[in-house]
Amino acid sequence: SRNEDIHIWVGDGLYPRGEAKVSVFDSSVQGGDAVWEGIRVYEEGIFSPDRHLDRLYHSAKALAFDVIPDRSYIKKAIYETLTANKMYSDVHIRLTLTRGEKITSGMDPRVNQSGPCLIVLAEWKPPVYDNKSGIRVISTSVQRNSPRHLDSKIHHNNLLNNILAKIQANVAGVDAGLMLDTEGFVAELNGTNVFTIRDNEVFTPHAHACLPGITRGLVMECCRDLQIPCTEKNLSLTEFYTADGVFATGTMGELTPVTEIDGREVDFDRGWDIFEDIQGQFRTLIPKYCIPVKEL
Ligand code: PMP
Image 1 (cartoon, rainbow, N blue to C red):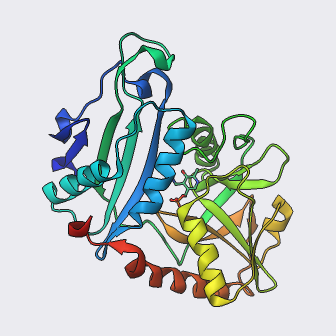
Image 2: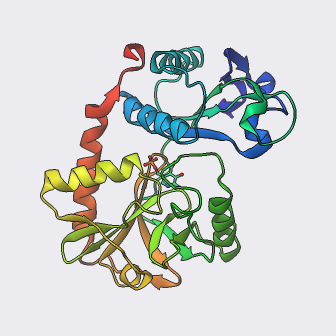
Image 3: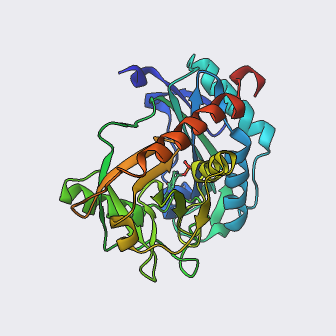
């Protein structure tokens, strides 16, 4: 595939895919101690880089990283990576910032001798939405972390609860796992946020136990623009089963309909028009919020 010949930014510069490596002493290997962002590149440019960098900085600050590279350095690394690979659309960037390399094994941040380590992995990946067939999901027994555990507002690399939820979805033969919070309300899917449509209004779970997704925030903005009421609310599984429409949101797939939850078909008869209006409005934000690669 086209992704075999890519160059990847690791630490201080670009390396061919086969030579792009982190140390076995890196904090991400020793404890999942890293933060990340998934960023999309459209024909119009990089989608909302500052929203992503804000979230990256907040995550690194919450984890008390000693050193955080400045915004212009990270943008330069993204620019260098995209131009070296001649990547100007249909690209997804996995940006990772690890705490850095340790002098010995272990979790203690004090044994870090250098850091942080920036990784810019840009791959050819068009958005993976399928608007006709949508996605099928199940609710999982794995819960989403609450602020009492590992705050879901930190976009960290410790993805194991999402991975366990995805494994349950895989075993059930569906596309994604719907994760509840510790109270039993719906939090999010294993890699996307979720919304319901009911009686011409839109709802989404509070951000207590989900990632504050950038697409989620923009969908709320689209609803305001379209004058569709959109409310953050505790939502039970029953409210998902009986909604007039359910959709997932994320950088990877934008807005994707959810067609089945735990074997119950989502009846979109009354919600489809609203879904399409919001999706159409979201597409208008792409040229508005993209920064051309050369202007980064
Ligand atoms: N929830 C989780 C758990 C995620 O990992 C992601 C994507 N990184 C999202 C939601 C969607 O967030 P965004 O809209 O910022 O891509």
